[in-house]
Image 1 (cartoon, rainbow, N blue to C red):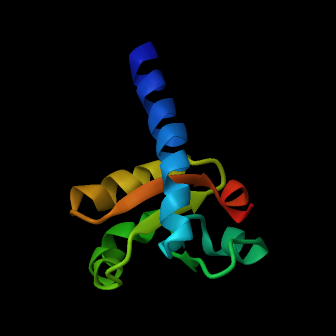
Image 2: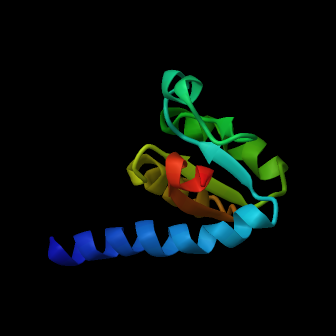
Image 3: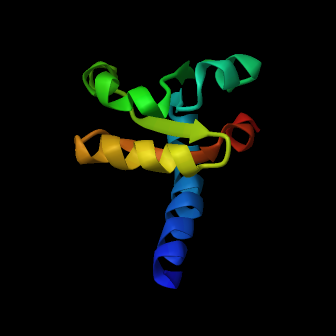
Length: 103
């Protein structure tokens, strides 16, 4: 269990740091929170694809031909969505919390 927790934290925080370069280079920010959470506040220019719907949007996200940076409230849902999209061959990283990306 400890090893799994350490690996999860590394993915959240290490990949979040590498995402900042992708954001600066014009990556598309995808907020995977619910529509109501997104409406309450989000990163300017980001799009909303709730994590529960991520499978149905794989093709449309692939057509964007941009690196993707995923975010949510804490980084947990975006980690899950990142793994799904990576398994489909997309260039994606977990940006963690939308508030941290907003800075």
